[in-house]
Image 1 (tube, rainbow, N blue to C red):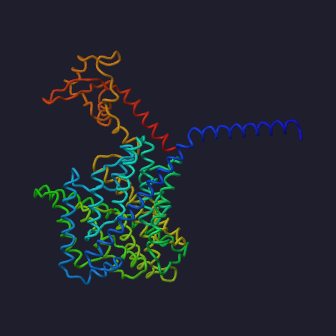
Image 2 (image 1 turned 90 degrees about the horizontal axis):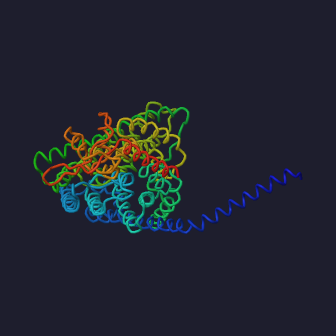
Image 3 (image 1 turned 135 degrees about the horizontal axis):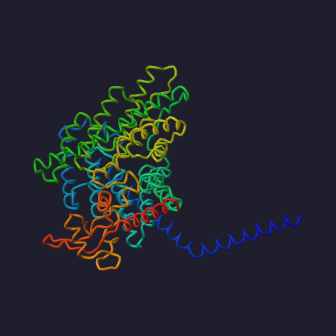
Length: 561
C-alpha cells in the first residue's frame, strides 16, 4: 500500500470518527427531547385513534337504535321498509338538536371541520378552537345518526385538532411543534377512521400541513400507525370496501378512457363543490330575509332531507352501502346517474343547512356512481377492448374525492387502502391526475381552501399570500418619539389626509397604502371610545418588508427542515 493511499484512508477514518463524536454529542444534547416528542406523538395518536373509533361506533349504535335495525351496513335497504313519517321526522329532530348545540356553544352557528384545521396549522401555530370544536363534534355525531347526508372524516379531523391543541397548550409548544402535533393527531384520526395508515400520514402532510418536511414525517407516521392499530384491534385487518369482482385493465387501449373519466370527474367534483357553496349562500340569504333563528336552520334542512329520503333512502348517512353497490356493479346506468345527482343535492342541503359532517365519504360515493355510469357506457360501446365497468367505478371514486380534497397523493393511497386492490393503480392515478388538474383551476385548489377564501382567509396561493395577515402593525411600527420615527405633528398631518392604519390591523391591510402612495411610512393609530384617532407610531415600508421577509424565511426553513 502506498504512502498516499495510507494517508487518504487515515484521513477518511479521522473524518468518520469526528462525525461519530458529533453525532454522539447531538444525541446527548437533543436526543432525549426528540424521543420525548415521539412519545407525545404516540400518545396523541392513541387518543385521536380512540376518539375516531368511538365516533364511528356511537354513530352505528345510534343509527341502529333510531332506525331499528341490527345491521346498519344495510341501512338504506332497511329504510325502504320503514314508515314514511319516521324517515321524515328523524332528521328534523336531529336538526333541532344540532341547531341548539351550535347556537349555544359557537359564536356563529357554524360547524368546524377540516378547513378550520388547515387554517389553524397555517395561522395559529397549530391550534384550533376548543369549545366550538367539541360542539361541532357532537353536532356532527347527531347529524350522521339521524339522517344527515355527509361524512365522518371532517368532525374527527377537527376533534383530533382539539386534542393536539390541548397538549400543545400544556407543553407550551411553539409554532413548529404545535403544527407537528396537529399533523400527528389528524393522521391518527384518519387512519383509525378508514384503516389506512399510509393515507392518514399523507393526508396530514398534504392537506393539513401542506408540506412534506422531514422533521414532521417520523412523529406523524408513529401517530398514524397507532391510529391504525386501534382500528384493527376492533375491526381486524380488513378493508373498508370488499370488491367481489376485481377489474382487469386493458392498459394501452383503455387509458384514453380513464383520461376522459378523469376530466368528467373533475367537472362532477366542481358541480359538487359549487352546489354546496350555492346552498350555503341561499340558506344564509333565506335565513336573513325571514329573520329565521340560526338554531332553526339545521331543522329546516332536516325536513328537506327527510322528504328526499322518503323516495331516496340511500342519502341517509355516510352511504357505504350504495358505494359498495356501485363498486360491485349492482346498479343500472339510470339508477347510478340518478343516485349521484340526488346524493349531491342531499349533501348540499346538509352542508348548506349547517348540520355538520364532512365531504370525503360522500365524494367517494358520488365518484363511484359517476365512474360506474361512465363504465357502463364505455364497456357497452367497446365491449371487446374494455375491462369491467366496476373498474371505472373504482377509478371514479378516487378521481372525484381527490379533486374535492385537492389531495391527489393521499386520496390515491386512501382509495387503495379502502379496497385493498393494488392491481389497477395506473387507472386510478390517470383519472385522479386529470380530475385534480381540471378542478383545481376552477376553484381555489380544493373545497377546503375555497371555503377559507370565502371567509377572506387566503391560504390557497401559499405563504406569500397569507403571512401578511399574521403580522400586526403594532408589532412592527416605530413608536412616536423615537429618533428614527416621525413626529406627532407629521403623523397628524398624514392622518388628516386619510393615511393611517389601526395598531390592531395586519400588514395585509397596511401594504396597499405603500402600493398606491409614494410615502415611506404611514401613522399607526388607536381609536378611543369617542372615535378619536391618536397616533402611537409609524409603520415604515422598509420595516414591513423586513418583517415579511423574516416570516417567509422562517416558513421556508420549516418546510425544508
